[in-house]
Length: 547
Image (cartoon, rainbow, N blue to C red; front, side, top):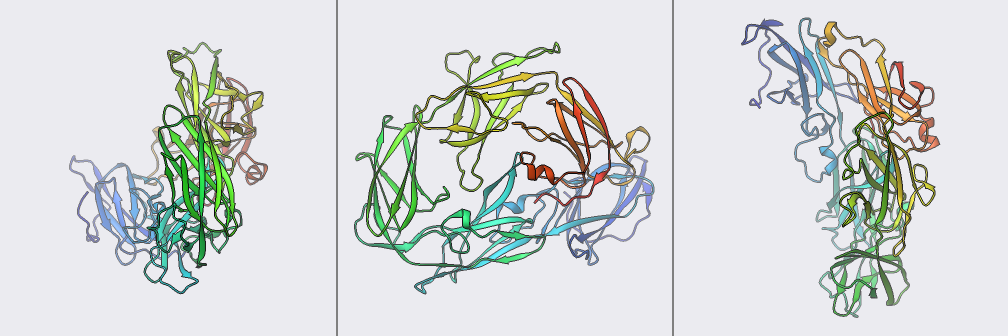
């Protein structure tokens, strides 16, 4: 990358490049997407090779650029840029979300090159203050941030970063894109060095969710727009922690075993739970409330246990039963009809993953196909990390699609898979077909130039989605638009789809009536038969970017 420089003197719009061809100036401005004001000293990178900072008016200029197609990335501290990491540059108290960025913008350089305008969104942030009921210093308390996101069309909360309070109890979570957030504090003990089996009085501060509740289902949700700041203050009340002793009962001794205390929503609390392998006992100190002891053991098999308990002003003794987590047998039938060469039987032809049904407390996951030992790669099984209710997500390998997916007569395209410890699960049965459908289309007003070359200037970004109007365990079909404004969506399961073209990337809830209703009247609805093709002509729908 070239060294950073401020804008050079103006150059002719057309010149000769090193090879004697035509060269042009690429000029433009970077502006704040909210206020419309120019953004000075934004880093503009052309084709990852040439870079400069915008001047005081937000302007940039690259001179003597040969005709052709290029990518442009823009970065600026305090803004969500695009390409090359996109976010800010190294402020403290940031989350992993400031690494999120859209792809680089594509431009075509040529004669009559227009001036470019790139809009970048100011970052949001959450600040707060943690106050202790005792008035003591509240530095070093961990605050965890959760962001509501879509996972294959279903909403869920994901941990998005954390910060520790400063010596005065304040904290900052910066570099946030627009969206919905929750916060929680971790447990904190007066003396973290006290042995977990000590019967002496132990005091500390239990974990809470903003604005001071213990159940994430009742937590406050902070919704941030571009460039907005929110404040979230906590007051933590010092409480007595009581000794909790759990006898571990397992038929699979040995292996690495871990235990943790979960809150009412199934999220880790930060309480230390120490396992005494010789005595087969777990010890922890926990304050009043409803809690869950969760355990995992990894050896020849995966073993799991969970025990709910309540603390009400006194020590608690309980037992936790550890049972083997089942591996689901998976049978795969290839109902191929079009003469396509079938893949090797050692290739499953499909991938699987699991998404917890509970969007707040579901931490378990799993999926993936493993060959059954001794089967020679012709029989399969799916691993699960812990019991629970899961949506099964299927990712067939082209040219196949999933025509059905069931377990014990239950349609997994519209119902969750229930996993119970110690059970003998019904096989997951998958049928793959290769007579897939397709949808082709044309974007209105995007005919392009002769030979499919884009017109000089920014190549408009358009995302095309085929929203399935039927229950599916598959992903949302999406595709890119070619330079001449055409697109093709392949390997589709037969059925009805709402096809839309958007000028910003979208996270679409395509599993619920409310999610589908949000797109009513937009795009075009088509039905495709097995092996068939439908053609659509679409206007581009102006949308806000996914949050």
